[in-house]
Length: 229
Ligand SMILES: [Mg+2]
Image (cartoon, rainbow, N blue to C red; front, side, top):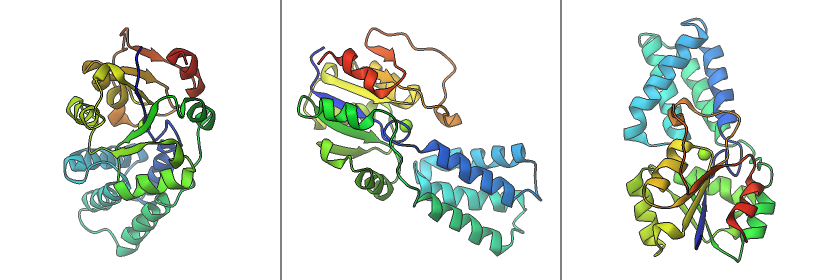
């Protein structure tokens, strides 16, 4: 490998994220339990969320609007304003969750820093991702933070062009096979998958991935021997 840039996904790769969304979904389901079963509520919320992705993009603000819309749909537009108030409050709490780094993050970044250009490549709200990176104390390791509206092949191609490198000089690390691995392999880069214990349904794929430029590793520090410093 002749790598120049090592890119890290942020949510559930550098720090906890999906766990907080699941907690909020639990609170939403408890709040709305008079209307539907837990499963029915989860399904309706997911449906609205996915339908709104193309309008709102990824992130907490879009999620808040989707919870409100789902509550309106589920209640036939009879939802009390107190419930809307609660939903907004849950969303704001989600925006203020503490940043909890995952195992080996600091150690890995420290080992790679100065040897490669390190980049964050993440989806989500610009302001929220900046807040998380700032509060994580990891900002100084990174040359560049890219908040992407999506992680399709075209989005990675654009990023690589801006970084003025070849795809074969790009190495991506993340917890989503769909967003962090498959598009990067498709354009000729390298990718490592580090699974988080829970994955958002939208990021799941139903097949395994085999490729010379790809490994699944258990923890972030395992990338160090793989990259062969
Ligand atoms: Mg992620």
